[in-house]
Amino acid sequence: MASRTATAVEEYATDGEVVAAIDALTTAETLRLSKVASFRARGLAAFGLGTSADDLLQEAIARTLNGTRRWRKTVNFVTHLTQTIRSIANHAREELKGGTVAPATSDDADGKLDGIAVWSVAPDPERAAAAVEQLDKISESFESDPEVGLILTCLARGMTGPEIHADLGITQTQYETIMTRLRRGVDRREGWRP
Amino acid sequence: MTSPNDPREHLAALMDACAENVESMTDEGLLEEAAATGVDASAESSRIRGVLFGALVKAKKAQLADAAREYQKGNAVLTRRAPRIPVAAPERRAFLMQELEERPHVKDAVAELKHGDVPSLSDADVENVLKQLEALGLLAEGNSKPRS
Image 1 (cartoon, chains in turn cyan, brown):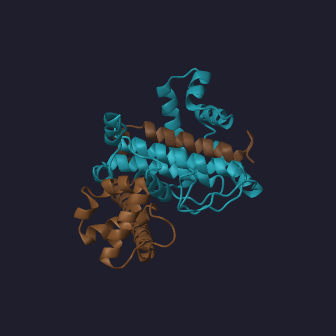
Image 2 (cartoon, chains in turn brown, red):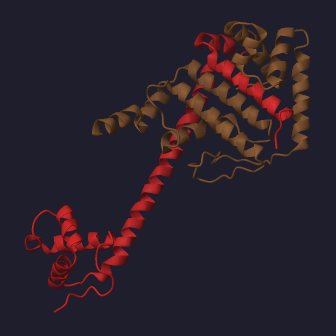
Image 3 (cartoon, chains in turn cyan, green):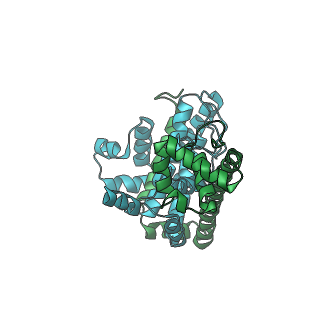
């Protein structure tokens, strides 16, 4: 039992190890975090959530340190942060699906998006209209790329990546290549800069 | 309420797929893309590190503030309860002896707190043990005056 506890303690990073991991991040890793957080934040913006990419990064670190989402050292630190960001974004969206506003409290043991400014309610026709407009513009910009068009259609049907390549009969690599074109196009269209 | 036909869901799914695409990219691919689009990768890297360290400092400060609050709360409990304990050293010792006699669990607690018999404890040890017993809620309620 004692050795089991000791293993559990060693499994998770200490605060000092988190500091060292941030310090050791490479340029490519920080770019990855920046871009991932940016897209997750844009996903939240679709629902009218005013959460920035930096907010998501900060919340991921806060949860890592306060024990809500500890870093298991067998997992790559960047992977841990990107998974934590995804979890934060998913929880925030789930809150909105229920038509409630996630409160900004200091206690995030309930998994809500805490410490982050949140200001929206779910049924929002204006936001839905804005999303339609944004989706139409993205589709228009890929009119000459039928492969991207197909991926957009599949995503609109709620299909996941693996479902899409199985359905379209393409490999994971082919799917990622098309997705890269789509992602770069979205960035270009929105004029995204880090 | 969102529905399968909710355009906000479609847009969010598209952004999620883009995030997952970034997650699957190689480091070289990310650096090449930054260079191709004129992004100052070094400056962005410094900025992101600053954001992460800033969050770390904020979280540590919050932890320290919580710890300080807990310490003050514990201290306040000891201070608030201390007046129940007799002021004079001989009375304090007699009170402890009385508690030991009337409540066996106090004896166990004292054995945990201080090794050795009560008569061998210094006056300061007796006071300290009483304060800890009081804080743990192990002393008798009401008048703490030892019977004469």
